[in-house]
Amino acid sequence: MRVKAAPGIRFPREDKPRNYIEQDETEVPATAYYLKAIVDGDLVDLDAAKPAASKAAASTNTTA
Image 1 (cartoon, rainbow, N blue to C red):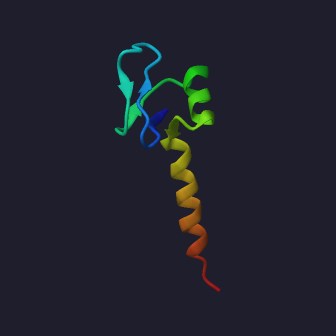
Image 2: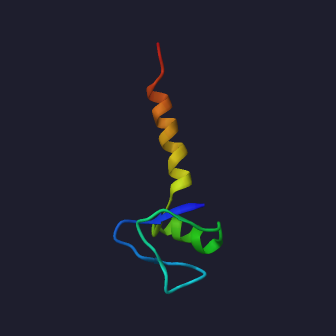
């Protein structure tokens, strides 16, 4: 899954805690560690954000 840190956050990687996930897109496994960080708001799930944006764009393109 693709994630990035929330604004102003440096989040430690699960496998290398001295390396941080920052504002760059990073590929990580869908483990409990990262899923909890998403729920807590420390990480942003870029895969989940993408379909929501596509659905919003599709709903504005309806014709009457």
